[in-house]
Length: 622
Image 1 (cartoon, rainbow, N blue to C red):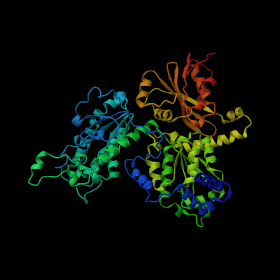
Image 2 (cartoon, rainbow, N blue to C red):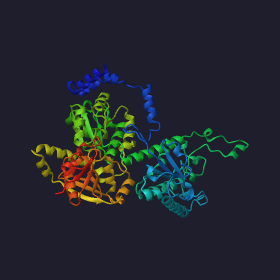
Image 3 (spheres, rainbow, N blue to C red):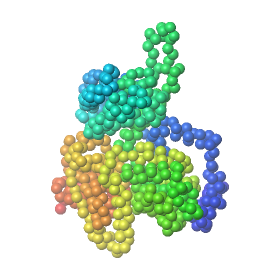
Image 4 (cartoon, rainbow, N blue to C red):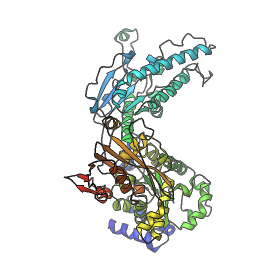
């Protein structure tokens, strides 16, 4: 019965009645069929609990392939000694107070660790009484103390990152917890080195700058994690000295039990959320690791319009103006634009009259969001599944790389069934902004020109496709594009183009001859052993696509060939392999079926290679 009603409602909405009429008359029945959850329902309560629990800072809604790090190395002080008990994955800890010597190797072989976390003790950078006795009016001495602290910080960072530099291991460096309030008082200057809070904030600035200069190393901002969860429940600066920089705990000295009035455990005086804080650190570190690896990366966000981008049905509104986007809609709009700046493509799928929407758009958005911010738009009365299929084809991505956001449960259900692996959102609008901005799947570890210009590239791709349909032959189409391909070599992880190559190789699914994902240290080893990344950039008469492909060659073996979906179908791969094969005797190649890399299954056959055993090809010279 439920299935029949759903099918009837979808057909009705698609073909028989105006959308606005559907929303007024049939939507209440849709809600009843799908099962509206009131705030008192247990299912709703569970959703709220999950979103406000350990997944608050790192939402799990977009996760397609659950996994955890194999093993993690923690190098730090007593602050981080207990972290491994709460991270939820295997960890080894090495204490590094006061620059005690790092051993030649960690407890396990370095390749067993997916990443390491380095936590520098604040107390070793800013000694206990560093500025206790300095006159408040003595600005110069405060600056000298700060400069000395910066020098100690550099030395400590150099020391603790030895394994990072020796092995290229992915590393996250923890920053310092800043005091909750200005210890000098509410009326003392806030942004002044005489204020210990500002003093430590500026140390964090210097730490971030030093970390950014280190290869394969990133800042893990635990100060913002503590602020988000509530420093009053976490930080020990309410009882310990300001430069201790640690967390509240239940540690008791035995002698204090002999006081006239014995001291009770800390939990009797304060509410502690230390374990939750540590768990959040582990969750954020894991999220950063997965983002670097490109796990479940989102490449395309498709949004509905009515009751998603704005409140209500714009086409029916008597006064379609900017009041329709006040509240959570504005937060959602900003989140979309921030995702676009990260390199995620935006698209619209809406059942509406396109001319009517175009006319209302600026009055509603008032310059905040442009139609041009969306690389592809399908505003018509076709089924949303049909429009989404069209967009996925134009953008050339897999459904598993796509998020679809719609307020209608019927549409969400139809799309989810039509495209296995697609991520679907919209039931809980108050979660949307946080999911889009904080989920690891929408984030990027590096910001490249190709990422920031992705929308313009997709628009050029749409123009190119339009041209293709007007020409009689594929040959005429390719000639008309005036394609140019520039190949250059990347020999080191320090090369300015390596970050883009690393991102491309680990995010490409369809045109990927092996499907392999690489770590930074694996690339360092590959290049040091004679391997070369032959990267190539492409441009045609519509746009410059930037670096869109890489061929990894070691000796005479093509270990992997990856190419962005944006240039699939332009015979770019033939141009690249033709040039590379001219300089290589007996060039061979690997090719493995990953179930999702069909676009490259015939690449070597088309480019003059012949089969040479299972999964191996060799170039037919002459």
